[in-house]
Image (tube, rainbow, N blue to C red; front, side, top):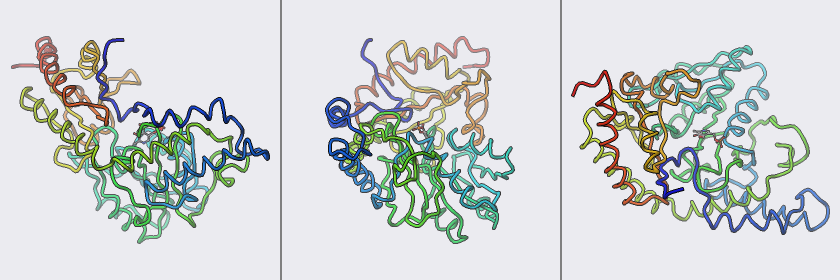
Length: 386
Ligand code: PLP
């Protein structure tokens, strides 16, 4: 394959070589089961504890508050299921219109199982309606589940003030921090949040490893029933190498959080400024909101996002579309629809998400190529009148 420019880091990230190095011996040299009585297996338990400590310290939590899962989706499912199982009389769930599929689709399923779901709307900049949220909270509410940062637009929700509002009513609060981890500073010691989901593969650890922060004293009901692993809170033999990798990635993230993200934000801002300047009828979604430093969702009116992606792909540029037509329908993403992005723009939306591995020369290459692609597509669009 020719040299690629990978700008799809909200989908997944490259495993850091330091992470991989730390993982490798746990496949072939130290392959024991941490639950075994012999020391060959038992020693591995200490490495798992070290990883737990590293993740806890990235978010200022206690190691016992970290529960390993298989991914961010499992963490989200665990949190919501635990809340409703632990509070069987409460039949109301509050979430937003722009959540990840692992929250959105679970809530849809639960709505057919006797639960009432309130979906908080967002404004045109992707900001959640706090008055709507306040009005939703009732004695029947089992849990409020909201994302910290949106995977498509990067828009950040004011989690601290929402937490205070939700907890003042004594309601469980879960935060999906999968896109926030390693990009924003997270301090669970100060934050009034009961459960928080994170995932390894968004911070240069491998795919298939996640964690759930569970505040001390929070009532909990396991999602995966099995052995005594994770103190009986999640059955199943631990994914040892990936847990160790996640721990290392967390340690690296805590060292470079500020420095990396200043550089990444500068590159993202250059990309946005130049594309807006060179391409007419271009909109940055959520531009006026506080956003993750690495993410931009850009709509080019009167063109199809999928066509843009295919043409970018020819140049080795890997981005993603904000109008994923995974179901084969031509519906734009639920996030853009919730923000009221006009149909003509929502269809032509591309998400670029950067990481520490991107360079400014890669941004210049995109800036050089993309205006021509959009012009070519507009020239054959029946809707474009230049
Ligand atoms: N939540 C958000 C906001 C995400 O962006 C993602 C993944 O893209 C997930 C949850 C799910 O994480 P995982 O891929 O580890 O299941």
